[in-house]
Image 1 (cartoon, rainbow, N blue to C red):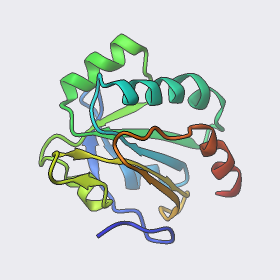
Image 2: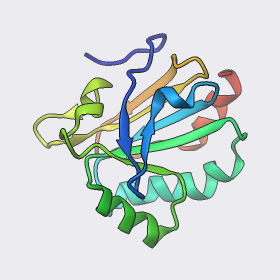
Image 3: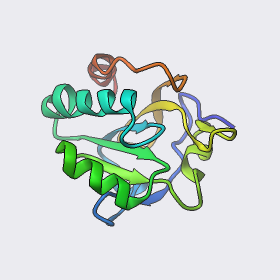
Length: 152
């Protein structure tokens, strides 16, 4: 079942690219931009995460946390983060495979990976905006700023 705007965001705990556990509920009081992407080291994902690095993370208020999620292992996430200089949290939904993507309704069962789902979650843990793009369609990262202006 897909998560909709107005729903409480499903809580989760995943390890980031450094092996550190990140729990969504521990980020209460912060706005969270939760970005699911199909696979590390792939073309469109590369462009999107580089745009997040270059155009988004550098200009958001201190209370905004960016969490990216894919089914890649922690080791793949770390290699990609190190190669590209990604400093935001890159979370591994590797095992149980795609469990968090399923909880948010963005797991492609046939391909075994996440769709391009983005969720903006307010400081109380409520989903205030979402967009889901098909795998071959890149997201418009500039839209995230507009959304955050309206979400407290």
